[in-house]
Each structure stands twice: as structure tokens, then as C-alpha cells.
Image (cartoon, rainbow, N blue to C red; front, side, top):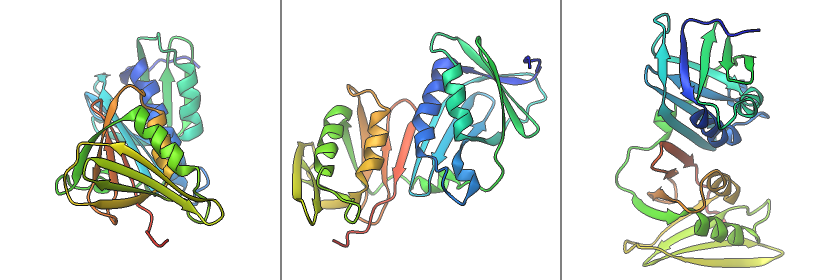
Amino acid sequence: TGFEENSFHEVPARLLRELIRRTAFATDNESSRYALGGVKLEFEKDQITAIGTDGRRLAKMTGPISTTGDAIDADQSIIVPTRAMQLIERAVAPSDAEVQVAVKGNEILVHSARATISARLLEGRFPDWRKVFPDSGGGVKLDLAVGATHTAIRQAAIVTSEESRGVDLTFAEGMLVLSGRAAEVGQSRVELPISYDGDELTVTLDPKFVMEFLKVLDAEKTFILEVKDSESAAVCSTDDGYGYVIMPLARDR
């Protein structure tokens, strides 16, 4: 099928690939909640937001787009199956300039230099991501290096097991201590120097969720980690429109 739409959104190819790479991994195809097996796309006249979640963590990425034609309802939101999103990512070359995206009934049409892809949309309720991101303030905000944090969490996670899969992140003066433990292996303790001089604070996170977030970032860059207390979600963000929320694990060990 060709692409003959008069009303569509134009998304920079590089941005579209990044949107998919940074949200598709957080979706959940196994869930009985059908909608979680897809990436939600919210279109406004000049920006697109993509959201992926499995109920325990949520990734969202926002970037600029342009909109052509007047038949488009400025605020459109749809859920595209994760597998279709991964196919779209492969069909779009980083060297492409703009990709045309149109929503028609219950399908999405994506037109790039190489291909036109049509995918059926998912029905169902999707969590409101605005409610998942806690109101800013009151928490500790830290600027962390992507590469060093990834290495530290990977080392701390080596001794975790299915029963005790959490890694404790303890923020103390000048130091982030990452520790994991598993009955049969013992304990790990990795120290990362940070600029922090507040009260000691510990949050327990699933290291897989942290590593999957860090993996889609440039190792040379930094990100902001915001932590309030052991019961509140940890919020990670970058300066290019990417946010990631991780629900903490109970510290029952």
C-alpha cells in the first residue's frame, strides 16, 4: 500500500528511532492488561510523547514534530503494539530525514523512504503517565554518570537472586553505596563517589530495570536521579526529553 494521506505528522527519523528504543523495552507483552503490550503515542501539534510501561516501571520520551493538514485532531493518543514499533524502528534509517505518521481509524501508517508500514492499534486502558511521575520537589536530586552507574549496578547485581533480586542504593555523605545479597552467594558492596551531603537514604530497586534504562543512554552522558524515600518511586531523567520511573521493592530482607 502507498501512503496517500493528506493529514499526517512528520517526525524526524532519528527521534522516532530513539522514541522506540527508549520506551519499547519497558512494555509488557505477557500482561493480562492488553494495552501494556504496546507503546502509547500522544500527538500534539508540535510534539510527540511515547510511553512504555509494565506497571512496575514507566519510560517516556518527548520530542518535536510538525503536523500537516487540518483534519488531525491536535491531541491524538493511540497504543501501538510493541512488535509493530520494533518493526517500524527497523524500517526507518537513521539517515532518513522525516518520517510521515498518520492515524486512520484503528491503524497507524508510517511512511519512510524505504517502506510504508501499517499496524493495527491496541484497545484498552493505559495508565496515566502524568500521575506516575511524582510531583517534583522534596526529594534528593543527583547528577550521575551513565557509564559509571551502569558498571556499579551491574557489579552489585551479580550476587542478587530471584528471591532477593533488589539492589540497595544508599545515599550517604559523598558516597552512593550499591549493595546486593543472595543467601547462597553472599554480599556485594560497590561505592560510587557523588556530591551529596544530606541525610542517609536507602531505596531498593530491581537492578534489571535500572540497567535497561542506562543501556539506551550514551555512556559518556549524565542523568538525574531523584529519590525521596524508600517507599517512593525513583525518577530518572535526561536533558533530552527522556524520563523513567522505577517503583521501589520492599526492603524485607
